[in-house]
Structure formats: structure tokens, C-alpha cells
Amino acid sequence: MIISQKKAFDEVLEFMKDKSKVVLTGCSECATVCKVGGEEELAEMKELLELEGKEVLGTIVLSPACNLLNTRKDLKQLKEELKVADAILSLSCGDGTQTIAKVAKPEVYPATDTMFIGEIERIGQFEEACKACGECELGWTAAICPITKCAKGLMNGPCGGAKDKKCEVSDDNDCAWLLIYDKLKDLGKLGNMMEMREPKNFEKGNAPRRINLRNQEKETAKA
Amino acid sequence: MSLLKEVLERGEFGVTAEMAPPKGTDLSHLLECARLIKGRVHGVNVTDFQSAVLRATSLVTCKLLQDEGLEPILQLTGRDRNRIAIQGELLAAGVFGMENALALTGDHTVVGDHPQAKPVFDLDSVGILQAATTLMSGKDMTGHELQGTPNFFLGACVTPRFDPMEAQILKMEKKIKAGAKFFQTQAIYDLETMREFKEKTKHLDAKILAGIIPLKSAGMAKFMNNNVPGVFVPEDQIERIKNAPKEERVQEGIKMAGELIRQLKEEGLCDGVHIMAIGAEENVPLILDAAGL
Image (tube, rainbow over all chains, first blue to last red; front, side, top):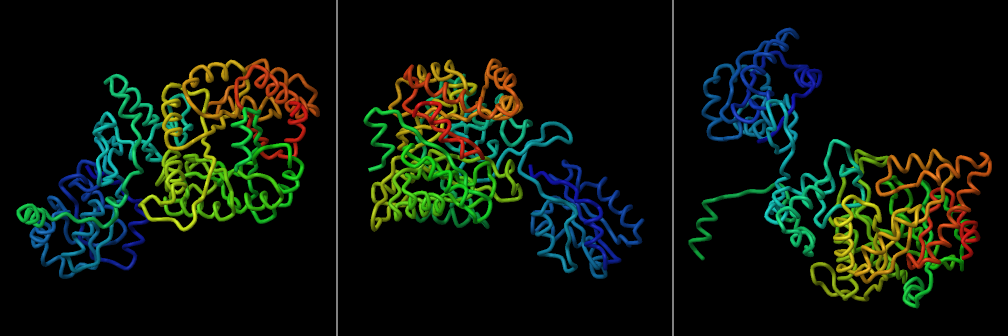
């Protein structure tokens, strides 16, 4: 799940400084679960903007905002409103916001900060879990990600910075490498940790990345 | 050949000291301190933006120490440089004929004085050692031939008190496989820690220099016990420094450091010591005097 947070309303208002007619967009997926861009948050944002004298021409929950073809189709429901709107305020993640900007005419502004790929621990509680490094390491680390859960993304075991098994960066963080150590030990697989690893290939994480399954299929067929 | 390597391989008691470049361009105090220990230590570590705090670089400071006739130990962390810059720094050290390098992961940027900085950590301590070893073979990390090859006596750090200790030793083994020939430890204050550490690492082929940080006050000791990972100052030592008259506490700390070094040496618990005076480098000669070195 892509975890987002609401921007401070003052920041949003600054984007809307010279705008009077606004369309609000949300997203049915991650942004709804994170409570930043569902029906409820759209209604709340509408009210806040109206109190500031803005005219909210329409609101829509895209499902999901990051699907280009779908967003193009869904936004047709607000065709007339978008013709006269000064701006779109997007309550989805940064991905969705960019997709909307590709297909809609008015300027698009974000009402959220996209934080991380993470786990829903319980309602309203999220934890970062994956850095999308492009080469998953979980196969030898007892399914605990050293790239994400270790503040330094270390590949060869704990640094000397852990105290009482907590990370030097924050007492809230368990030392990821000690979690990995304990779990590998339980599994009888400490050998995984002793193995020398070549420095990680970060080339696989160079942005912007693209995947085209059709091209991949063609490549496979050729081979 | 590296003086430190020569001394340690001969089985003599190695002595290194640590110096941190200042924030700014005036290195006169550091060089004054360096002159005082010239001929008395086998190497001087220069820290690499220690504690993630901006200062002059390790390499430039190492060069000045080298010009003064001391043997520098270039410290390199993975925090601020990617593998291109790290290899470049090592090659640059090689250009100057420097023969010692010590690899560390490095404190995280958030604990330093520029917490907004983007932390790099492209290579960790093991990765830096691998990179240095590769350069020493005449190639860079991607296999390109070097025109002129550096030669280093490689070192790393270890924390003799860590929970669980096995995880720390496992990493120490990897550092040795990656090329580390000597280790400097986190500061120790009791012999028992070193006895246990020696027992647990007796299967490893590397020289161990015990870390020494002289105490200046009971407050400092308590602070380290509470905040510095791997450091343990026993209660009797805190009492001893507390009971010394206020104006004599620094001297008392120096005396205690000297005693500890003598005991470590007598009992053969390490191959040498690494003295970190942390902002009081002018005291290093006094510690050496107290230790009879």
C-alpha cells in the first residue's frame, strides 16, 4: 500500500491562493485506506475550502487515481465543471496526482504528502516496509527487509550503533539486523548472514523505472 | 611498508591515537597536538566527519599529518560518499603514499549537525573493505585496470560489548574476509570485557587495538553508559573520578587510562591500544607517559 499523509491546510490554501473554482479528486484505494483521500476527506476538504470562500464545483473518488485510462474515463463525469475550474486539488498519492495532471486541463495541486510503501498494522497505523529497490533481498534475510528496516540499508549485518537492540536513529526502531539475526538463528540459517555479499546493485533502482509486460513477452518469444 | 603493520606483525605493542579535524580551516591546534606525539605512536587516525558532524576532510588532514612526519590512518565511512567517491578517496590516499585505511559504516546523518542531508550508505564497512581490497589488486570495483595501485594496511572497528555479541563477531569475521587486518575497539574501561572479547575472538586472525577514552568526570562516564552503544564504565571507576578533587579529575582520568593500558598490556589482552582523547588531544602524551609507552 502507498501510504500518504494530509498536507497542512495552510500549505494547501497557499496553492489555492489565486484560485476560486476548484474540483476535488480522491482515490478509492490507498488514499481511502490512509484516510487522506476517500469520500469523507473530500467532504471535509470541500467544507474547509468553502469556509475560505472557494467554490468547490465537484468532487470525485477515482478508482484508482493512478490508472491512466480509468482516470481519463472517470473525469468525464465532471466534464463541464473541469471546463470552468481554476484548479484540481488531488487528495490521492503523488502517483495519482501526476496521472490526473496528464489527462486534465486545469492545474493540479497535491493535498497530501506521499510517505512510503508500507503495511497497515491496524486502522490508521502504518509502517514502511519496502523501498522498491528493484532487487528483493528477502529471500536470504528471513523476510525482514534490511534495505528498509535498517536506517542505513546495510547489507552485511548490524553496525555498532544499536543499544538495547534499538537503532541509533530512534529508540522506536528495532535494530533490523538483530531481528534478522534472531530469526535466521531460529530457522537454523545463520549461514545466510555469514555469506559475503557483493555490494548491492543500486542501478536497478534508478528512477524513473518502467516496465512493459508486452515488450517483455516479445523478448521472451524471440528468445 | 605501513609502520603500524610492521609493528603489529613483529608482535610489538601498537599505539594509535585519534584526531578529529576542526570545523573550519585552522588546523594549527591539531598539528600542535600531532607534533607532541610524533615518534610516540605508530599511527594517527583521522576521523571522517565524526559523529556525522561537518569538518575538514580526513584525507587533507591525513596529508598534513604525513607532512609532519606522522603516519596517518585514513578513516572512511559509507555515509557521505558512494562507491565512486570512496574509491576515489582511496586512490587519492594512494597518490600521497598513505598506507593505512580504516573502514566504518558511519553514524547516521540524523545524529549529526546536518540532519537534513541525504544519507548515502552505498557501501557499508564490509563493502568499503571489499572496495579497498579490490583496488589493491590493481582493479576498480567494476574490473577496470588501474594505472598505479594503492597499498593499504586495512582496519575496521568492533564493539567488544554488544548484545548479542555473536552478531558483532559474525560481522567482524566478514570484515576480516573483506580484508581487515586490524581492529580498533569501542572504548573499554574494564579488563573483564577484554578478557571475554579475547576469548570469543581467539579463532580470528586480526590484530586488536583496545579503545581508550580517558574519563574527565563522573558525568561523562554516566553519559557514556546511558548513551554510547557498547560502552560500559564500571561503578568503581565512576566513584574514583567523582572522589578526586574537581580540578584534578582530568589528571585522574589520564592516570586511570594509563593504568588500564598497563594492565591490558601485562595480561596480553590486546595487540595494542587506540587512544581517543576526544577534544583533548593535547593530553595524549600524558596518557602515554602514564602508561609507560
